[in-house]
Length: 603
Image 1: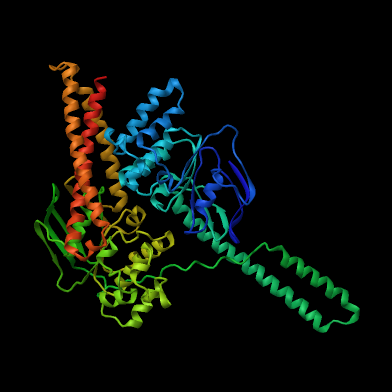
Image 2: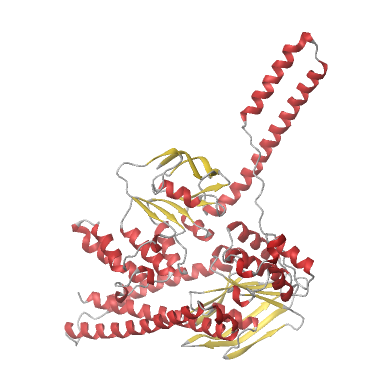
């Protein structure tokens, strides 16, 4: 695909102009830029969904495009079965059986059970709809793909699967994503669009990290070129001004010649003024005491269970100045453990002991837990710490919430703005230990990077739960992982945890293959009885999954009721139950997949 001089306008507003580039075969381009820069608009033009205001797009003759928009799964009224049928209807007869099996295996890996096929997609969660749309796109086998935020709503297991799939695929991709770790793993180069300007960076691995280095060098070079251009322009202007002040009628032609040369030089516009840096959030976190030796807190024998045990016997010694990330699949109990560390939830067993001289601050995942939405942003800051109104307004201003906006009720702010109010409240407290639950949610990349820089320089201790793997890799010294009731503490940061997870998945695949090979070919049960037995077990597990889903739907409905948040204890109880149910559902789905494979093996 080749595109030249593309323009995009919305009314009188110009989004971008002069955008040009080429997607080579096998190349995976990650498209980045701030919110509102036009990333999704550019993808719609390249996918042929919208026509450009100007410019041209040339696509390879006969090549089939696969396009995944952010809202594709929300735009259909179809059932999952209809989505499957639509994908298979475009499959050649000789490949129908293989594609049908592949699609159903993919949907099974994504957590879809046969009893879900008749349900309309609009009844599924955002994550389930995203998975269904992704499976539908991939099974269509396009020649190149354009993906707009493909990891939105996906759990870490599915994101890791998608990373492996794309990284090993030979087709061309254009991918918009705010997941920098994902871009580092799958992209071969980065395209950037910012305030109407489009830049293509040289290939590099890891791609996003290489892009940051290249961008810094580009900005420095642009500044040098512009400074040289401006200096030469001022020199020529001074020369012309001097001639004008002293010229006589005999050297008028020399003045005119110099003026023409100056006009031609200024008209070249080879070095336009570099773009001023975008205003990012200005975070500063201070510890009550300087970094030093000694413990921040000690956790020993921590256990918690709801429908089933989340974890048992967890131990963690956190030193002052140390950073620990808590990682694991959804529903494993990460946020529950963090709340126990913060003192907001009592463990079933064990205890947390803080250094008597240390103070701690907790940053909740849910804004309702820490902000009174009926009160103004300023009032929330004043209630969170002993600061003056002037100091509260100053902190909000550093979060890009200034002037009259600071007096608006929190209910009037967006999700990202509420997170920034919470960060302002965190800055108002000088704490020795920060307990952070998804602090980068709803923040754009620039704001995330600003926060990461501050956390890296913070002298106190940090425990952080986050799906932002780039953040965890950048700041964490150790990882406390939780999964299926097991736990451990791993040195080496997040990259060591990722390596452990990939090795575990590899061993699980090998073990499953070995077990399949060792399985006796004959059985005392007849094939009919074996099938009946497996079908009974599958039905039992499906009923168990349905019960979990029904209860989770009841909890989701409860969370939709604003009156619930007046009872903080009830909110905490429901959040913990929801986590436990997610874990139980994941375990039941794993059993269902194993039984289904056994049933398929019978033929």
